[in-house]
Image (cartoon, rainbow, N blue to C red; front, side, top):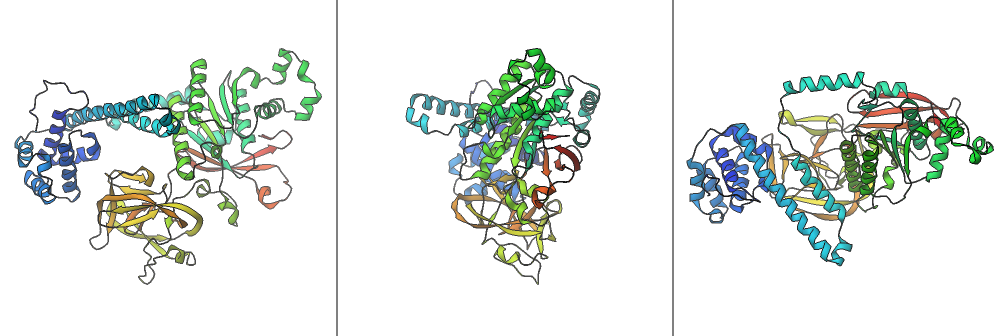
Length: 581
């Protein structure tokens, strides 16, 4: 152990801060609770300290006292006591008892976090250096992974201290007052549809909005109607439209029709190619005064999207709206498409926050909606749900039977499924709403050190010591939650192996009102959390009935709204110019 002086500067690690954290855990149970909730062993640089912290946390998880004797006994039982320098190291850490406050502990944690960030940046810089001097590695390297790692590192830097709610009253009230009173600097963008603005409180800057529907139902027409509405309400707005399906010319012609209320044929008959600039401004008064950028590159990357938004913001100081048509055309169409779509939506959400702009992503619905009698879309139709192997074991309260194959549940829609009510660590029962076969998918095998195991898709969430994590975000340092029915408690077990399993027929469950259930004694999440702040669905009855529409109405279903109400709104559709009103 290092002596407690700070006479020597350490660039990539600080042994004194590491020692003080370990001493704090031994000295104060309350401080130990705080420290274990804030950090894990990856922040420690010195291997002995990393091992000591891991074993302290194991004692903590087993609800045992963390004392020098208990720690020495645990390390000795694993035959790793010599690896950390022997008993003397532990005795030295426990010799000094001092009253460490939460503020002091947080300061030491900040030092460890900063050092870890520097080590991560150094690692990334070495990778970059290697790529520069190796053409072969440069051509084969997945730069999106590098960007993701860099983003994770930067996000660590942005972690702030906890702020008491009483200190947020004044800024929150100021924000609400500015939202109501300010016109030019309003943090919301009005859609021009009064009822939608009432429900959503307009489009909040920094938010991600998904507008979804089946093909040809009018998603692009709705998005273009939004653009014209915004141009009519605000002087010189800056709007960026990324179209991966239609050409720039097609988008411009539709915007001209919407602004002039003339069909394409009427515009052609006017012979506008010889018109003066003033005549064109009079004919298209809203879009001609706006800063509208249309990018129709069909293979655009997320990095290019970020660069274009950044350039527009630098030029105009503010971007009012970004629209992407459509979500499923982004990316590299990798085999694990659910994982890739998740990465895309998280990146778009980060763009919305970084550039302080509402980002609208148009999205296709999956075909689940076609299989139901009621064709109105649901949130489940939007996402790729996490799914389980058909051999997974779930618990059903039907004559105390345990069905080892989820397929057996499909023909019994009224069985009660056991779920875990986490706050009180008790089993509750809920109706098994739906069990179905989405098809064949790639599965990953997770095996715990107590030999519990489960095979499931990469996008499924699983409960860990640090909260819910997707399977593709787990690492070997994570501890997974299992539920022991005999003693009615949750335990966290280290991971032994995470590996690819195979591709096979899988099953999905929808479990209201709880978000979790137990499979193979492991606590898992029933659905993928969406990155979107708002989800709107477009629905037209005539689309599914095949009948000629009698009133040209379309239903906007507000299925998700983080900061407001959900509900249904009717809009009129003008098919001649593809306009929503």
